[in-house]
Image (cartoon, rainbow, N blue to C red; front, top):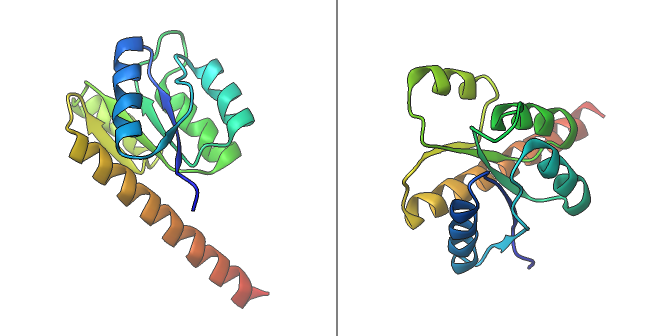
Length: 138
């Protein structure tokens, strides 16, 4: 079975590198991290990740929430928000795009692992239900 391919979108290079190292330790395949919206879309288009970890605050005009909207619209794969903002305004914006998870920095390796595994499990259940519904309808 192939490894789960994860895209990290984080504008702070040190945090992105540390996150990728942790994901490697957890036996996931990590793509080259993206630092902004445009770079993330290029990587998504080329590499087709299984899941993404998106920092909400990115350098530039577009945020991680903008990227999540685009992922839902064009690519349909799970994503987890990563942020140092646990305020209610940020949380309300994030909830509108139905993330598969929400991690607040700093987080532990275990919290990262469980968030990813739950997100992937829930997504596979959703896909399975959709396939079954499609078969029944047809």
